[in-house]
Image (cartoon, rainbow, N blue to C red; front, side, top):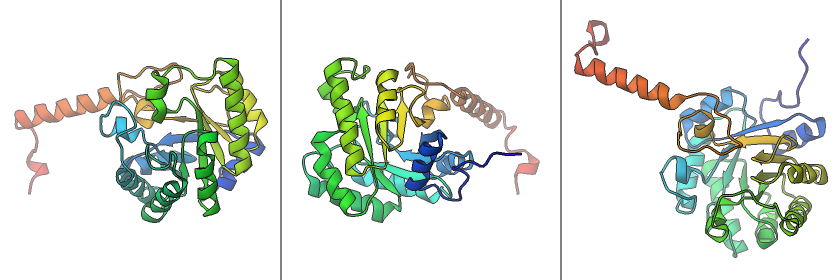
Amino acid sequence: MSVHKVSDVKRVTVHTLQAMKEAGEKIAMLTAYDFSMARILDAGGADVLLVGDSASNVMAGHETTLPITLDQMIYHASSVVRGVQRALVVVDLPFGTYQGDSKMALKSSIRIMKESGAHAVKLEGGQEVSESIRRILKAGIPVMGHLGLTPQSIYKFGTYTVRAREEAEANRLLSDADMLADLGCFGLVLEKIPAKLAKRVSEAVAIPTIGIGGGNDCDGQVLVTQDMLGITKDFHPRFLRRYADLFSVIREATASYVADVKSQDFPNEEEQY
């Protein structure tokens, strides 16, 4: 007899995620940036699809997440929404669209929701972005937080190393997590922090935590899809598990196609009119 899971729903909502945390069912989240991949990931059962500003790296080839624009994020989000029937679609607010200006943060979030059809937004930071979060939530837009390694602040940190190893930073992260939950965020990404600290946060806050390099005690996990599928080859963080080697599969398929075209094997008589 199959066991009924909270996630066995036609459409995942922020309330579904909360119920999953309370039932002890883990949340599976992946990134998506286009229609075709979103449709596959949705069919594969992903609970949440994050239209991450990691599109700046993965799709555009930039070194950091900073260059991607709001218009570009809306384009990617719109493409993902059209490919999804079940998953919750969360969109990153890109760098420069919410920091230090809560009115801009609200305007950016409204544009994402209206123009892409997405279900929620995500932004990085704690106390310093509290006013932006408060204003977005007042407009009825669900917000996911993000603490630990915050890639938009890479030039402040100077490195992508593990965050909050020291007690002072760990305590600040715990305080920020409590604040984000109290403000009304529906979830919280914890990136590259010690597993013991992620466990403390996950137990301390009532909202779901999603780990990326945060250990197994988070309420869910997220990976960049192109990393998980082995499409990217030059990224080897400790937290990444590759479930396929699509770089090699696609390269070999391409080489076979090229060879068939060169040898005039493709198209054959059955493949022409």
